[in-house]
Image (cartoon, rainbow, N blue to C red):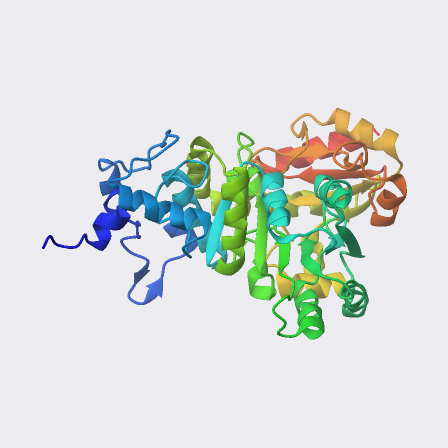
Length: 439
């Protein structure tokens, strides 16, 4: 009788050995993320000894035999738990994306991670994987304008409802909103902290405590997802404070060079597997070249974010006392402050970030004059790049938000959002000074 086929012959794993870092600890000391970014998840022997992963530009992958092909598709279609048992088709996965996802998860100690073609693709896939007609999404406010549009205008067409609470809400305010929502099925609690563009912080611990108090151990307890783009992963790690899922626009700090668009979702394996099934269906995975560029960027993530954060502290210290500035919404000032926002900052954040809200004395005319006078900082949306960027949220990124809601959320005509880059801090201060003089 012929020998039975081996597990390796059935699965075809010889074509895709799961790479492991050669060293993840030395003398019992676990290596830091900045070190692991140089090689985690990639084995050079699988790619002719290449120090860096090649870009795998292929649409499909060859099976070693028919049984392996069947097993792969059992995983992809959900007939067998665990997902794909290897590489199948580039709508599902690919070597570059898998290496990137392995490394992304390290920063926050996540069980699993997924990458997407944009931050909004990540958010949309998250929503579509969890929400059913008639469900309610509870969210903090404000959110990125496209996220609010997706919830209220797009999902709203399919019978999805929403309730919100302000970013700085107290436990009592959060309890009131969640209790009201709990009369129906709450699919998701979605947070953004700091809020875009006001920089208001959400008390993730209070949200988690409120959720757990209301739903207890119920199987239908809604997961908590949070957009951590402004501070993560260096200055905030929400999974440690009760979040189940963390969302990123990887375009920002993770990419960090203003030359790619991508998104990421990290968190518990149970939720990530649900999102993965939706991504497999609608094809929102990022492309291999973008994944390769993100791998490059992750190697310098800590360096870039640290330098930008140091620069922001210096620039904001200058702006704080300028006679033409009404207020600087810089999180670093909360370290020595009092009040609820300061308390959240001390419990949740390890740094003030490099993106802040600048409220000028005046209105749109003064804000526009300031923006048009900048010489080093670029007038552009986005944030978290190596260069300093400045924009006017009320007239640009949040123009679609109704005027009454903008006023309620503090998105005023005198607000300028600034993302500090890695230039020389004194040069940036000189640029801000001359632009303020033009008002």
